[in-house]
Amino acid sequence: MKYIYDLHRIMLRQNLILVYEGEFTQEITKSVLAMAERNMDAFGEEAAIKRKVFNVMVECLQNICKHAEAYDTDGYGRNSAIFMIGKHNNEYIITSGNAIPQDRVEELSARLEHINSLDKEGLKNLYKEIIKKGELSSKGGAGLGFIDMARKSGHKLRYDFEPINDSLAFFSLRTTISRTNS
Amino acid sequence: MEIINLEGTEDTPRIILDKEKALFEISGRSLPEDAAEFYAPILEWLDKYQTMPNPETNFSFKLEYFNTASSKLILDILSKLDNIPGSRVTWYYHEDDEDMEEAGEEFSELVENLPFEFKSY
Image (tube, rainbow over the protein chains, first blue to last red):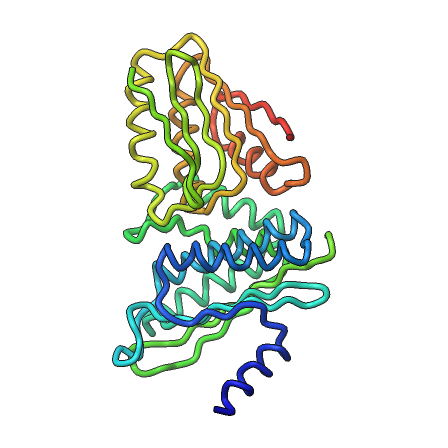
């Protein structure tokens, strides 16, 4: 049973205030949002910071609902993934990890790289350009999630891809929100 | 004309569209998973309203939060209003919510003629 203690210690060491692993649905998204909100309310987080964290969480969680693939189908349900929030003195760190098809890695990586190459004004222009084209994907996404996360964060998005097998890769994404007002 | 009166939920906004009382308002949180489906009746209503609008249409947005999928649909609503003569938008934002203020400004830049008024609360 030591793994329980180990897991708890890791969570404390990483300052994780919330970890969710499992299937992601809109209902789960709402519950995770409510928990994080209550948590931030409990220690009187500033409204402006709370809104940004909420904002990034929504985009992150809804991305997972729309795009995560099942990978350990024996043990997991559809679109199983992990979502975490870390609270540090100066920042919140919102992290997610989920499987995506290998053949999407290149395109996704290029998109994130492009977003990270842009400054505040560049992100704003890209946002307007995409929303003006106004197409929703077959999954109902507007193609604006990562841009919005980068804008609300004000920091670069950090990401990584680990191969799972021939057809799947594990996509990790990390967004930082400063707690000091910028 | 029929009245649309939707109570807000934790992930969908409160919406009132009442031609007779001249009430046009979307408020609260908008983060439905399927924004297109949620807003479809609103866009249909506006299509009908466009054929017989009031002389003035003051449409209020008082959103606390919206997801990117909703932002696309909000622009669709604004684009319809843009084609209705006598319409204008009042965009409310919480006084310390710069992101919501900026979002309103960006929407105002994305439509042609529709006048925007910004109000903090």
